[in-house]
Every structure is written in C-alpha cells, then in structure tokens.
Image (tube, rainbow over all chains, first blue to last red; front, side, top):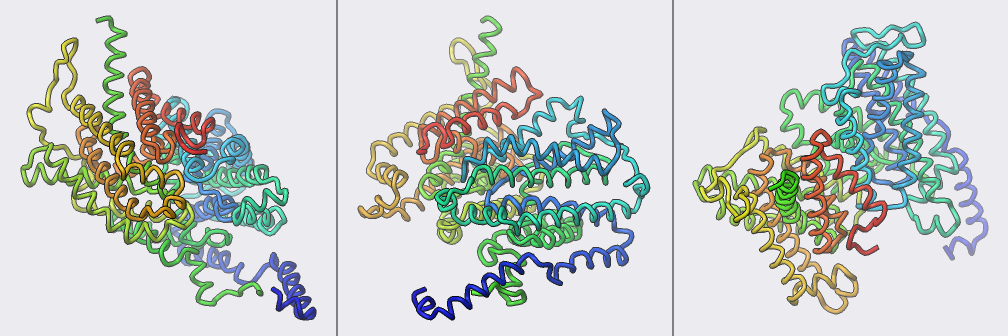
Length: 339
Length: 290
C-alpha cells in the first residue's frame, strides 16, 4: 500500500482502472447469451424432451433464488423448499378452489404470497446465524409440510392435487403434451427473473449483501441496516422461489406435499454449489448438469446416482469450493477483475 | 387405574424411551459441535451404520442382540476416527456451508452404500426372549424392550455425567468447550480430545442406531430421516451441554409422544413448533452460551 501511494500517478491509474471496472461490471458480456442460445438449440435438437426441459428451467430459477440469499448474502438455508412449495400450492389452490386459472397472474400471485411469508419468517429468523438459523429454516419448511398434512382434506396431502386445470398462457398458448408451451413459458419467466436478479446483484443493495456475507461486523459498524437488508433479500428470494414453484405446478398440472421435502431443499443447494455460488450463472450450470445426470443415471441405478452425488459433494468441498464456474475461472477461461 | 392416568403413564414411559434414544444418539454430536463448532450432518449415517452392523452380527453370525450392540458401538467408534482425522479436520476453520456440504455428501454416500448391500427394505433383528413381551413393574406392565432402553439410557447418563463433571478428562472437555484458545494455551491437547469425543459420540450414535431397529425399523434413509431430530435436540439443548441435551431430548421425546397419542395426524408438527419457539426465545438453546 505504501509503495503504491508514494507514486501518485500509479495510484490514480489504479483508481481509474477500478472505477472503470465498477462502471462496466454490470454490462452484458457475450458469454451471457450462451445459456439462451443453448436453450434455443435444445428446443430444436430435443423437441420431444421439452417436458423435461421445462423442469430444468424451473430448477434453474429455484437455484437462482437460492443464489441470492446463499451466494450473495451468505445465509445458509436448508429450508428453501418452503417457499417453492408455498408458490406451488398458491396456484394449485387458487385454480382448484377459486377458479383462478390464468397462469401469468398466478405466477405473480404465488411470488407475492411467498414473498410476504418470506418477510415475516425472515424478520424472525434472520437475527440468528449458524446452527440456530439452519435449524429454524429446516423446522419452518417441515412445519409447513406437517401443517399441509394435517389439513390433507384441503391440500390433498401426500397423494397430491391431481388434474389441475390452467388457462392457456397469455390466453393463446395451450399447454401441449410435448411441453413446448411449458418450455417457452418457463424460459420467458426465467429471462425476466434473471434480468431482475442481475439488477439487484449489481446495485448498491447487492454490494451491501456481499459486504454482509464477507464481514457482518464491519457492515454493522459502518451503519448498514444489516437485518433489514437481509429480510429484503430473503423476501425477494422467497418470491422467486415461489414463482418457480408456481411454474412447477402449472407445467405438471399436479402437486403433492413432497415439494416441501428436506430432500428438495438439499437438492437445490447441491445444484447451486455444483454450479458455483454468488455468480448468477452457477445456478444455470449446476441445475442443468445435475438434472441431466440425474435423468440419465438415476434411471440406470438410483443407488449409484446417490453415491455419485455424495462423492461429488465431498470432492467439490475439498477441491473445487467455488463450483464448476469457479473451476473454469481457475483455468483462466474468464476475465479477472483488475488488481 | 383411571383411563386418563393410564394414558399419561403410557405417554411418559414411551416418551422416556424415545428421549433416551434421542439422547444416546445426539449427545456426541452436541459435544463435538460445542468443541469445534462443526456442523456434522453425517451423525445419522453413523447411527444407521451402527444399526446395520447389529443386523449383520445377529442375523449372519448369530451373536446375541446385546453383545452385538456393544460390538457395533466399538466398531463404529473406531471406524469414525479416520473420518475425523482425514476429512473433518480439514474443515474446522471453513464456513458452515462447506461443513454442511461435506457431511451431507458423506450421508448420501452412506445411504447409497448401505442400500446397495442391505436393500431398501426395513430390517429387524431377533431379540432374546427376555427383551420380548412385557415386564411387570408392580402397578403395571411395560414393554421390556423400551424398559431396557430406558435402563441403558439412565446408566449411560450417569457414566457420562460422572466422566464429564468429575474426571480430569471431562474437566478438560468442559474447558475446551468454554474457551478453546485458552484451553490450548494452558496445554490441553484439544485436537486429541476432539478425536476422542468424536469417536465416543459416533460409538454412542451407533448404539442408538442399534436400538432404533426395533423402535422404528431400520432403512438406509434413517441417516437423514432422523438427522433433523438429532440436530433439533442439539440446537434446543445448547451446544456442548450434557444437561441441555438431556433436557431437550426429554422435552422433545415426551411432547412428541404425547402429541402422537392425542393427535396422531399432526405427525412431527409439535416437534418443529417447539423447536421454533425455543430457538426464537433462546437462540443458543436451553444451556448454550449466547
């Protein structure tokens, strides 16, 4: 530090470079078009696998919601399925009991409900850290599941609510057997969500979240309203998870209480970790790779698949703590920020 | 006896047996978490592995149930040492997240491996005749298996309490839980202590897993199914506190049993509700350090 400040020109140059980096950081880069290109190519290469494709897109969205809270704000949660499930049941019950079958407004309503619950729950639990917080998130998801089971006359319990009916998307596109509508619909929602999340992540608010992740005490001492920021991002993340859940119900026309499973929460976290946390596109790579391998391997042998996933996690923690995207960075395939 | 009292006694008895199972399986977790702050989601896997060793010993080798329990506890206790030395040790200074991922990965691998060798169907073990049927305690008879579990639990609590509060090594563990750096600087070998308590805790978990076979039926998914319960006991009781773990196990065991008698469709709802309430009021658990 002393060395760089003794030569003023070098210091200014470094500051300029940093300023330039900060200004450009949020600009779109060409690799960011890749996921969408791949998605379009997939449509033409595997037209008969689009039902599966829509599920991959939904899981990407779910993992992206987790990335906000886990990757950026650094809050470890093993109960994010609670919000996915809330969204899934919001549209299911709205369609069944109220006859509210319009899909797009259903997704928005689901996001709203999950977000509201996120505010309330987050306000209570985000004061805590470590094991206490982890247990509270697990217990909250489990409580919702048990409550749904107690009122299984209403929720359909573990047998689920089958045969849900939804209107055509935008009043025009009917759901089809091959999942083409579902695929494009989910992809469109994901694009909107990604745009929104990207804005958040590169905003000053997003910077504050990263600060909280890196050093809570320092954020407190510079006067950042840590709790309020965490509750806000938790609610946003919950809302997005709820929207993913709503898409899940709409594309499957079916939902059961298993959406609240501990396994579901653990699975989405594994996807995100495999892809890489705190870098937006980690959710894309992680969810896609996980879902495709699961689809192939679990048909051959669910036991080996489970063993493989466990082994992968252990290896990832020991050798690639930043996920697949982190690996590519380490190999120098991605630009690094200037020093 | 009046009916209400009969039900109350049954709830207390079954709840006590359940609490002993919870205590035996989670006490090691509490102490190791208190010592190193390590989030170990593989504790359920050690318990499950212990259960399957008991299955193999009794069914394939024809060893009696009770000696099998002991052998299994020793085997798992010893087998856990390489895990601690080789894997866990590398992550003591890592974030919660990495610890969670590593140990959940181990749990997945354990589930898969045991499904491969033992299959997904619940196992049972042959019990000696004195553990089947009922035992008459004068005013009423109780299932002998649960009575035996309560007895073993009580003995273990006494031994652990004595070891923890009255021996040199127990004092060292308490000191390390309280303030690890301070303990190290007065010459306590905390690493070694940790390995010892880790092995002891895993061995006890295996014992709990052995008892679980006849209580709940043992499947490979035991490793995650009951894991949440163990973590709840640890979090509600307070990390590193023997007293807290026992109290939490009793509260959760008895209230859950009561809930299931009175209102069976609620499932585990009461457990989660208690957990949330306790943790919101006392985030470090009953006897944890804030």
